[in-house]
Length: 180
Image 1 (spheres, helix red, strand yellow):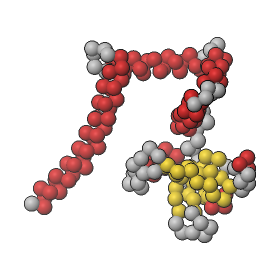
Image 2 (tube, one colour):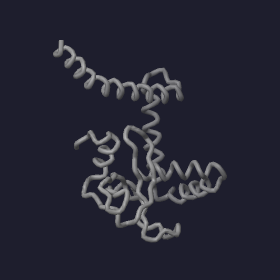
Image 3 (spheres, rainbow, N blue to C red):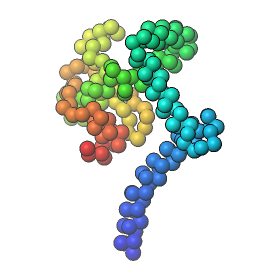
């Protein structure tokens, strides 16, 4: 009976991530296909990928770069829209832009000399513009969540980690389970 129970849990450990991933991808495909209402499954997703790539090409083209900057500036000035647009733009840029913000993994002592520490990403090395000289901003992603906390600590409580930021993010988000 113990072997059957072990096999059952091993099956769960294998199937749950596979099925959850397939389900999320299925939802993504059906939502995008539902927007376009194509008869061929997956065609809406393909059209979206192609459209985003074409817009990326246009946005990075030398001739249209000024137009893109002007549109960005105009969108950044609209009330209410500005708050949402700039927040999403900054968050997206933190992961895939030229100015990636989560590329400095650090270990943070919660109090001077404290043995309890957390892993995060230094996002600002100087907070003097906020009247906080000698302080840094550290983003602490939460495990199994798309949220996190921004903490402000003295620079002395920071220890830079010599690790790939992608691996550190995977380690944090997995709750310390991922080992690669």
